[in-house]
Image 1: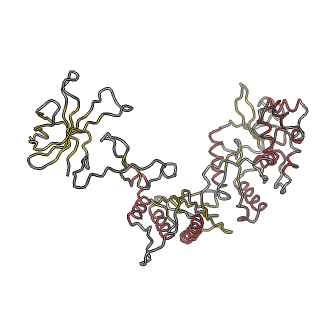
Image 2: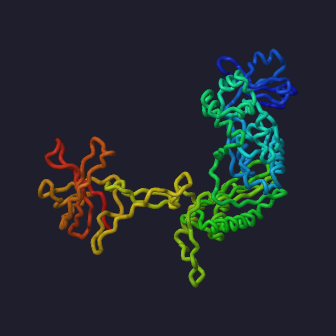
Image 3: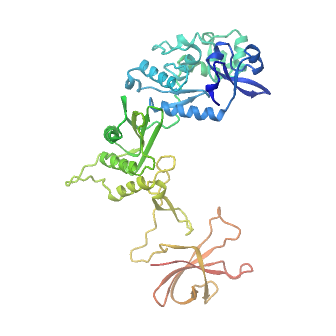
Length: 499
């Protein structure tokens, strides 16, 4: 749609609801002409024949609101959707960074006006009160302790989450203003109109405070810098990042914690946001190490960070933390927690990606085909949290005893021809890859049955043997099935070779 060709005609957005095209949004010109939501398009054209009409696109609207949420993330890390056409920002502890609540509100409004939006923004003590004042009274900032007095003068429609039938029933009962409801006993209101009405009323009056659910988890530790003039020099990014890392490290020291996942956010003045994440294999608050990981990350970017018209703010958030007590360093100056292998893994993950640096982890199973799995060396779940399942220890052979499993297994097991002295005994000889092996020593059987919750109709029990041939080579062999069962003879397979 090309809005430049609309001239000065009012714009309405319509959607088919119950068989009729109804208005779902209007611009300021249409609003001044008293065209409102819910009005049918036919009635709107009867009042204002010269209209510009656009079809509603819910998916496009949702994507646009998501982009606005990213833009507002520079003001506070706690941003949530508010109904389908608004955003809720929890600015607790953030306003002083921008010169107070009034300055922060003006900055948000100016930023939205700069991209062509007309918004209503109110600041109040609770989310529901702020929503009601912004949508129905246009109060900029509710003075401390005055939320209830301001909200009482609003219509009952300002209580979000109410069904239209409830609003109509309240109006017919003569309860048209929120103040009328506030003067009635809550038990009477709940009995007649439901507990949801009482809950919404208490929250809007500010008597209860329901926290918002942010779109992104609130970080454990945050350090950020806002700039009066946009930062345009890419060379200074590392200096700012180093300062933020030092601030974050001090914050983690106060909490006796170390970081596992660090996220740097770069907020450009045009609204674009770039985020860089690094992970560590163990709790860390070593500032030089974290900075080195970010240098590695910046060097491997296919699309380098472009300041464009400059950065308004840069934030470092520690998304995942774990307990890390202060460790006393050795006499050589190195900390007891220093681990060169972990540091190498961290650098490899930053350079090649989390899913490309893997390690083996044991599984709690007797099935040799499933007793190990590949997991990320960072040991972090996909959701960004440390795995809560306990680790399974690798089996340790008895001192002086050979291993019970080969280090590497054939996938799939290789079929062999074997001859056994008795039906259920170990093989006397077997042929593998056209070579005949005479068995001199054998140990077994070790019977392994398929897991019943995974068993397929054609799977059978396996009897495993550790055997040694005349040349001293050791093999892990199994017989699948038993003699005298079914119509087919058991088959022999070679599953692995001992080193």
